[in-house]
Length: 193
Image 1 (spheres, rainbow, N blue to C red):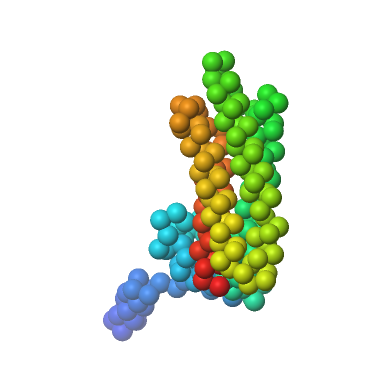
Image 2 (image 1 turned 90 degrees about the horizontal axis):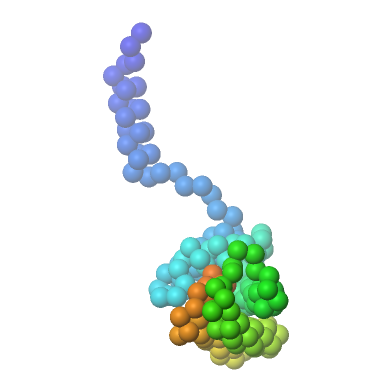
Protein backbone atom coordinates (compact mmCIF):
# COMPACT_ATOMS: atom_id res chain seq x y z
CA UNK A 1 0.00 0.00 0.00
CA UNK A 2 1.42 3.43 -0.95
CA UNK A 3 1.70 6.10 1.75
CA UNK A 4 -1.03 8.68 1.75
CA UNK A 5 -0.33 12.14 0.45
CA UNK A 6 -0.86 13.70 3.88
CA UNK A 7 1.66 11.37 5.57
CA UNK A 8 4.22 12.07 2.80
CA UNK A 9 3.75 15.83 3.27
CA UNK A 10 4.05 15.45 7.06
CA UNK A 11 7.29 13.48 6.74
CA UNK A 12 8.66 16.10 4.34
CA UNK A 13 7.80 18.90 6.76
CA UNK A 14 9.47 17.05 9.65
CA UNK A 15 12.58 16.43 7.53
CA UNK A 16 12.80 20.11 6.56
CA UNK A 17 12.34 21.20 10.19
CA UNK A 18 15.10 18.83 11.32
CA UNK A 19 17.40 20.27 8.68
CA UNK A 20 16.58 23.84 9.71
CA UNK A 21 16.62 23.21 13.46
CA UNK A 22 18.91 20.28 14.22
CA UNK A 23 18.51 18.64 17.56
CA UNK A 24 21.57 19.47 19.64
CA UNK A 25 22.68 17.31 22.51
CA UNK A 26 21.86 18.65 25.95
CA UNK A 27 24.85 20.05 27.79
CA UNK A 28 25.36 19.65 31.50
CA UNK A 29 25.28 22.86 33.58
CA UNK A 30 29.08 22.83 33.89
CA UNK A 31 29.47 22.34 30.11
CA UNK A 32 27.10 25.26 29.55
CA UNK A 33 29.06 27.49 31.95
CA UNK A 34 32.36 26.51 30.31
CA UNK A 35 30.99 27.16 26.83
CA UNK A 36 29.62 30.58 27.84
CA UNK A 37 32.88 31.59 29.52
CA UNK A 38 34.98 30.37 26.61
CA UNK A 39 32.86 32.23 24.08
CA UNK A 40 33.41 35.38 26.14
CA UNK A 41 37.15 35.06 26.79
CA UNK A 42 38.29 32.78 23.97
CA UNK A 43 36.28 34.13 21.10
CA UNK A 44 37.84 37.58 21.08
CA UNK A 45 41.33 36.53 22.08
CA UNK A 46 44.14 36.48 19.57
CA UNK A 47 45.94 34.01 21.84
CA UNK A 48 43.29 31.62 23.11
CA UNK A 49 40.57 30.14 20.97
CA UNK A 50 37.21 28.90 22.15
CA UNK A 51 38.16 25.28 21.50
CA UNK A 52 41.43 25.47 23.47
CA UNK A 53 39.52 27.09 26.35
CA UNK A 54 36.81 24.41 26.31
CA UNK A 55 39.33 21.59 26.13
CA UNK A 56 41.40 23.03 28.98
CA UNK A 57 38.58 23.88 31.36
CA UNK A 58 36.53 20.83 30.41
CA UNK A 59 39.44 18.59 31.35
CA UNK A 60 39.33 19.71 34.99
CA UNK A 61 35.96 21.32 35.74
CA UNK A 62 34.08 18.11 36.48
CA UNK A 63 30.40 18.40 37.27
CA UNK A 64 30.70 21.39 39.58
CA UNK A 65 27.70 23.64 38.87
CA UNK A 66 29.04 26.58 40.90
CA UNK A 67 31.42 27.63 38.17
CA UNK A 68 32.20 31.29 37.62
CA UNK A 69 35.11 33.27 36.22
CA UNK A 70 36.96 33.17 39.53
CA UNK A 71 36.72 29.37 39.68
CA UNK A 72 37.69 29.10 36.02
CA UNK A 73 40.66 31.40 36.64
CA UNK A 74 41.77 29.14 39.47
CA UNK A 75 41.45 26.10 37.21
CA UNK A 76 43.60 27.79 34.55
CA UNK A 77 46.25 28.59 37.17
CA UNK A 78 46.26 24.94 38.25
CA UNK A 79 46.59 23.75 34.65
CA UNK A 80 49.47 26.18 34.11
CA UNK A 81 51.21 24.83 37.22
CA UNK A 82 50.76 21.27 35.95
CA UNK A 83 52.16 22.28 32.56
CA UNK A 84 55.15 24.05 34.14
CA UNK A 85 55.89 21.06 36.39
CA UNK A 86 55.84 18.56 33.53
CA UNK A 87 57.82 20.90 31.27
CA UNK A 88 60.51 21.42 33.90
CA UNK A 89 60.70 17.63 34.33
CA UNK A 90 61.07 17.23 30.55
CA UNK A 91 63.81 19.88 30.49
CA UNK A 92 65.71 18.07 33.25
CA UNK A 93 65.40 14.81 31.31
CA UNK A 94 66.66 16.45 28.11
CA UNK A 95 69.61 17.98 29.94
CA UNK A 96 70.52 14.53 31.29
CA UNK A 97 70.54 13.20 27.74
CA UNK A 98 67.11 11.64 27.78
CA UNK A 99 64.23 12.84 25.72
CA UNK A 100 63.29 9.91 23.58
CA UNK A 101 63.06 10.91 19.94
CA UNK A 102 64.53 14.38 20.48
CA UNK A 103 68.20 14.04 19.56
CA UNK A 104 69.88 17.32 18.54
CA UNK A 105 72.81 17.21 16.14
CA UNK A 106 76.23 17.18 17.83
CA UNK A 107 76.97 20.79 16.83
CA UNK A 108 73.61 21.91 18.23
CA UNK A 109 74.05 20.25 21.65
CA UNK A 110 75.72 23.27 23.28
CA UNK A 111 73.15 25.69 21.86
CA UNK A 112 70.20 23.47 22.82
CA UNK A 113 71.65 22.93 26.30
CA UNK A 114 72.00 26.70 26.82
CA UNK A 115 68.42 27.22 25.70
CA UNK A 116 67.19 24.42 27.95
CA UNK A 117 69.03 25.87 30.95
CA UNK A 118 67.40 29.23 30.28
CA UNK A 119 64.00 27.56 29.93
CA UNK A 120 64.48 25.63 33.17
CA UNK A 121 65.02 28.92 34.97
CA UNK A 122 62.01 30.50 33.26
CA UNK A 123 59.74 27.57 34.12
CA UNK A 124 61.09 27.66 37.67
CA UNK A 125 59.83 31.23 37.80
CA UNK A 126 56.41 30.15 36.59
CA UNK A 127 56.30 27.52 39.33
CA UNK A 128 57.49 30.02 41.96
CA UNK A 129 54.65 32.38 41.02
CA UNK A 130 51.98 29.68 41.16
CA UNK A 131 51.16 29.77 44.89
CA UNK A 132 50.95 33.58 44.93
CA UNK A 133 48.74 33.51 41.85
CA UNK A 134 46.44 30.90 43.38
CA UNK A 135 46.20 32.94 46.57
CA UNK A 136 45.46 36.11 44.61
CA UNK A 137 42.64 34.42 42.67
CA UNK A 138 41.12 32.99 45.86
CA UNK A 139 41.34 36.38 47.59
CA UNK A 140 39.75 38.17 44.65
CA UNK A 141 42.92 40.13 43.87
CA UNK A 142 42.46 39.68 40.16
CA UNK A 143 44.84 42.38 38.92
CA UNK A 144 47.61 40.80 41.01
CA UNK A 145 46.79 37.37 39.58
CA UNK A 146 46.71 38.77 36.04
CA UNK A 147 50.16 40.33 36.49
CA UNK A 148 51.62 37.00 37.63
CA UNK A 149 49.96 35.21 34.72
CA UNK A 150 51.30 37.78 32.24
CA UNK A 151 54.82 37.09 33.57
CA UNK A 152 54.22 33.37 33.03
CA UNK A 153 53.08 33.98 29.44
CA UNK A 154 56.19 36.10 28.83
CA UNK A 155 58.40 33.35 30.29
CA UNK A 156 56.95 30.69 27.99
CA UNK A 157 57.38 33.00 24.99
CA UNK A 158 60.96 33.84 26.03
CA UNK A 159 61.79 30.14 26.29
CA UNK A 160 60.58 29.46 22.76
CA UNK A 161 62.18 32.64 21.40
CA UNK A 162 65.55 31.47 22.74
CA UNK A 163 65.48 28.50 20.41
CA UNK A 164 64.33 30.63 17.48
CA UNK A 165 67.06 33.26 18.04
CA UNK A 166 69.71 30.53 18.18
CA UNK A 167 68.29 28.76 15.11
CA UNK A 168 67.83 25.56 17.07
CA UNK A 169 64.88 23.19 16.91
CA UNK A 170 62.85 23.53 20.07
CA UNK A 171 61.97 20.30 21.85
CA UNK A 172 59.52 22.36 23.93
CA UNK A 173 57.35 24.00 21.27
CA UNK A 174 54.11 22.29 22.30
CA UNK A 175 54.74 22.86 26.02
CA UNK A 176 55.64 26.53 25.48
CA UNK A 177 52.55 27.08 23.34
CA UNK A 178 50.30 25.45 25.94
CA UNK A 179 51.88 27.39 28.81
CA UNK A 180 51.49 30.66 26.93
CA UNK A 181 47.84 29.94 26.09
CA UNK A 182 47.01 28.75 29.61
CA UNK A 183 48.52 31.89 31.10
CA UNK A 184 46.63 34.12 28.66
CA UNK A 185 43.45 32.14 29.33
CA UNK A 186 43.94 32.70 33.06
CA UNK A 187 44.41 36.44 32.48
CA UNK A 188 41.21 36.65 30.43
CA UNK A 189 39.25 34.69 33.03
CA UNK A 190 40.39 36.66 36.07
CA UNK A 191 39.83 39.94 34.21
CA UNK A 192 36.18 38.88 33.83
CA UNK A 193 35.78 37.75 37.44
